[in-house]
Length: 120
Image 1 (cartoon, rainbow, N blue to C red):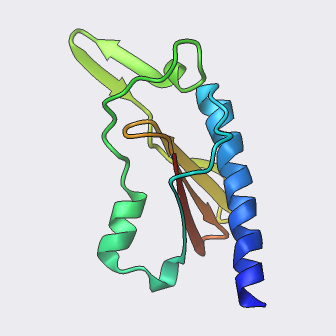
Image 2: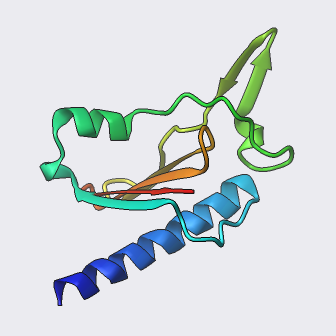
């Protein structure tokens, strides 16, 4: 019974992550992800929570013309990006972050309780 519920939640999280990847990067991720991680935030250690919340340092640039590319700013030889910043859809209900540093990584927080991460 419990495993069926976890599978349903993973399917919902995967669908959300695919939607964010397609929206931000114009790259639909239809293949199976490398990993899907789910964890209640109260069960994470301080170090795990800090790593989850931190914005990854990106080295790859998104596709030209994608929504993510519009968040890149180049000044002189310095590149600044909003990649990895958290986007709040509804305060205390849903927020997400997406990065393209080493594959596509989508992180989400549901109801300020469930931390989710999908990596392709």
